[in-house]
Amino acid sequence: MPHATGAESVRPAKELYIFHDVAKALTSSLDLDAILKTIMEKMAEHFRPDTWSLLMVDEEKNELYFAIAVGTASEALKQIRLKVGEGIAGHVAKYGEKLIVPDVRSDQRFAKRIDELTQWETQSIICVPLRSKLRVLGVIQLVNVDMMTFGHEEEFFLQALCDYAAIAIENARAVEKIQELTITDDCTGLYNARHLHKTLEAEVYRSARFGYEFSVLFIDLDHFKQVNDTHGHLIGSKLLAEMGYMIKAQLRLIDFAFRYGGDEFVVVLPQTGKDAALVVARRLRDTLRKIIFCKEEALNLNVRASIGVATYPHDAKAPHDIIRQADEMMYVVKNTTRDSIGVAQRGIEE
Image (cartoon, rainbow, N blue to C red; front, side):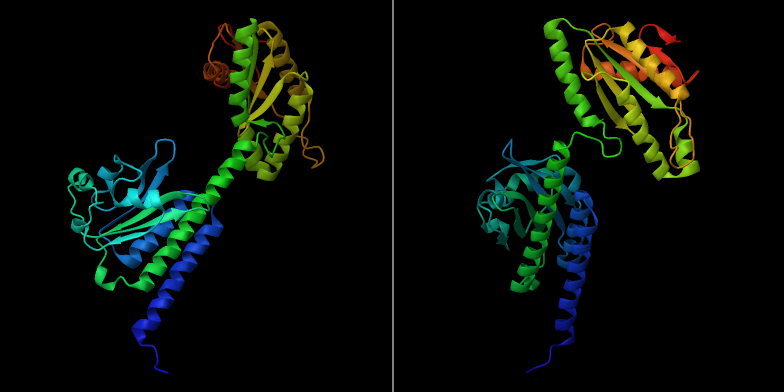
C-alpha cells in the first residue's frame, strides 16, 4: 500500500483544524453573525475565491439579499436583491441543489446585471444551498475559485461547511422564537420589556375604545451602580429581585410591573388618572425610603429611586410616546433632586 505524500497528509490535517474551529464557534456562541463570520472566513482561507458571499432568503418577498459579502464588490452587493430563481444563486435557492459553473458565460442562468452593477467580472461560480429540513435558508456563493484544484474532495468539504452554517442559522432562529415566547424577566420574575410594548398597545386600544385613562410609572434606581461596584453583581441581582417583589406588592391585581432593563422598572396602571397614579408613585417612594434590602446577606442596603409619571391620553396617545414622557420626567428627577417624583406637565412633586 503506497504511503501518502506530504501534501496529501497535510490537507486533511488542515481541514480538520478548520472543522475544529467551526465546531468551536458553533458550540461556544449563540451570536449568529460571529458564527457565520467564522465559517465564511475559514471557507475563504481554504478556497481563496476573489469574492464570496452569503445570501439569505427573505421568504416574505421571495428574494435573496446579501447578508455577508466580502471582496472589492462587497459594498455594491449589499444594495442588491435577487428574485428566488434569478441568476445562479437564485436557481440554487429555488431548487435546493448546488451548482458549480466553471464558466458563467456558457450558462444561461447567470445574471449579468450583477456584474454590471458591481463592475466586477465573474468567471466561475460555486453556489451551495444552506438547507434546513424543509426549506432553503440561504446560499453561499464563491466567485472565481481556481477550478483546476476544485475536485470531489473540495466539494465534499465545502458542503460540510455549508451544513454547519445551516445548523447555526436554524439554531439561532429557534433561540429567537423561544425568546419571543418568553415574557418574563429571569432575574426579577416581572414581565420583560418585550411584553411591555405589547401590553401598552393593548392598553391604548382598550382605553381609546372605552374612554379610559391609564398611567405609566418609570422607575430608575438611584446609585445602583455603587451596589454592583461595592458588593458585586450577584448581590446586585439579588437586590433587583427583591425590588421586583416589593414593586409588585404595592400594586393591584390589574396593574402590570415590568423590568425595563438594568435597574429600570416600568409600571402600567390601567384605568388610573394622574392623581391616582401619583398616590401609587408616592407609596413606592415612601416604601423605598423605609425598606431594607439584602437582609439575608447581612448587608441591610437602602436604595432610593427617581420616578417619572405620564398619563394617557393627556400626555401622549401613542405607546412609545407615553413611555418616553414618563422616562423624560424620571430624568428630570435624576438630574436634580433624585429620590423624588416627576409628573408630565406638572414637574417635580412631593
